[in-house]
Image 1 (spheres, rainbow, N blue to C red):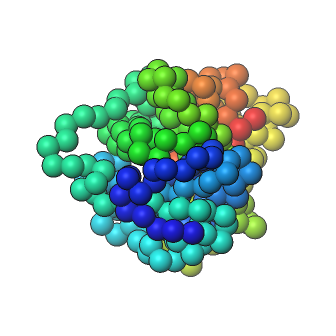
Image 2: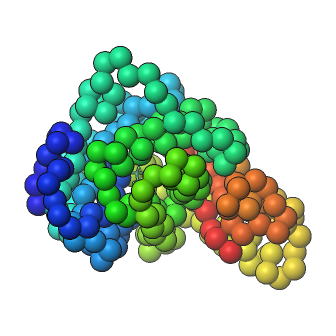
Amino acid sequence: MKIVHLPEELRGFGGTTAFVPTMGALHEGHLELVREAKRQANRVVVSVFVNPTQFGPNEDFARYPRNLERDSELAGGAGADVVYAPSVETMYPAGESTRVQVSGVTELYEGAHRPGHFDGVATVVLKLFNQVRPDVALFGRKDLQQCAVIAQMVRDLAVPVRLSFVPTVREADGLAMSSRNAYLSPEERAVAPTLYASLRQAVERLRAGVSSAESLEEARRAVSAVGFEVDYLDLIDASRFVPSAEGNAIVAAARLGRTRLIDNIEL
Ligand code: AMP
C-alpha cells in the first residue's frame, strides 16, 4: 500500500482500477466500499480529501476529523493499494474558476438545506475521476442523493466510468455509520438510533396500508420526541429526488445538538 499526493503518481498502472472517494475519518462503512472495490478490479485507489467546496460557511470543515496515518492503515487493511491524499492546492489550483452544477436531482433535500453542497461534490468527484481514471467508482447508499447526483453527472457528461452503489453499513443498534457520529455526546449517541428506527416503522406502516402522509408524520413526531430537529423526512422517488406518494425511498436529515445526521431506507 502506498500513499501518494500528486495525480502523476497514480499513472502507469496496466490493470483495472476501482476508486473509492472519501473525506477520511474512515469507519467500517468506508471499509466495506474498499472491500467491495477489491472484488471489482485489480487495483483499489482510495482518496482522502476533505473537500472545502462542499461545506457551507457554517458547517464543520475546520473541525472535520483528519488523521491520514490512521486512515491509510485502515484502508490498506481493507485492501486499498493506493491512498491518494491531494492538497487543497492540487485540487483547486490558484486561478481555478470552474464548477460542475447538476440540476434537477439537487433541487430538494440536501441540495435545499446545504446550498452549493452538490456543486462542490460534483466538481471534486469529476476532478478526482479525471486524475484517477478509474474503471469503476464506488459510493455508499447512505448518501442516496449523492448517488443520484453522481449518476446524473456521469450520464450527462459521458464520463467513462461504471458506478457501483453499496448498501449502508450500520452499528448494531441501527445507527448508520458516519464520521460525524464522533461528534455525538453519550446522551445524543443513545437516542441517535431513533432516526433509523422511525424510518423502519414508517415503512411498516406503509406496508400495513397506513397513508404515506400519516406514516411520515408519525416518524417525524417520533424523531422530534427524542430531541432531533428534523430538516426533512419524506417519501420520494429516488431516481428524481422529488416527493412521491408511490415513492421507493424515505430520506431523512435531522439535527441532534450541533450534529446533523442523514439516513434513508429504500423500499
Ligand atoms: P465521506 O467520507 O463521508 O464523504 O464518505 C465517503 C463514501 O463512503 C461515500 O460514498 C459515502 O456514501 C460512503 N459511506 C459513508 N458512510 C457509509 C456507511 N455507513 N455505509 C456505506 N457507505 C458509507
